[in-house]
Image (cartoon, rainbow, N blue to C red; front, side):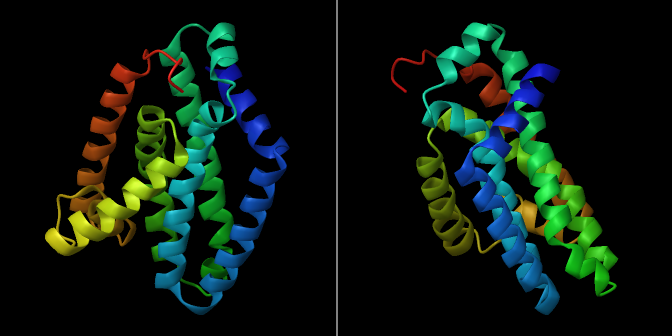
Length: 200
C-alpha cells in the first residue's frame, strides 16, 4: 500500500495539469480566505472533493489502470493506497489554502474543515473508484447536491453533502453522519473494485 501511495503522490506532482490546478486553486482559495471564511470553507471543500476524486480517477482517465493492477494485483491494496494518497492531497490543499484564515486568527473554522477533509477524501475517492470517470462524478455530484439535497432535502441531515457541510462547520452529528456516508461509499467501492476494466 505504501508503494501505491508513493506512486500516486508522485504521479500527482508530475502531471503538469494536476500541479497547475493545485497551485492556482490553492492561491485563489487562499485569497478568498483572506476576505470571507465561509466562501473559503465552501471553495476549499469543493476543491478537496475534486482533487481527491482526481487522484483515484486519473488511472482510468489516463488508461493506466491495467498497468497499475498488473503491478499490484490485489485491488483492495490499490484502493487503500489511492484513498491514502487522495487524503494526503486533499488535506494538504485545505491546510495550505487556509493559511490566510489562520493568520486572521480564526483557528476554529480551519480546524473544523481540516478535521472533516479525510472523510470527504474517502467519500470522493470511493465514489471515483466506482464511477471511474471524473466528469461523470462531478456532474452527478453537482446534480445530486442541487436537486436532491438542495431542492428536495432542503439541506437537512442525513444527506451526504449536507452532512459534510455541517461537519465542516463543527457539528459533531454532521461529522458522524458524513463518516457513515464515507463508510457506505467505501463498502461499495470495495465490492466494485474488482470490476473488469474493458469497458473503461
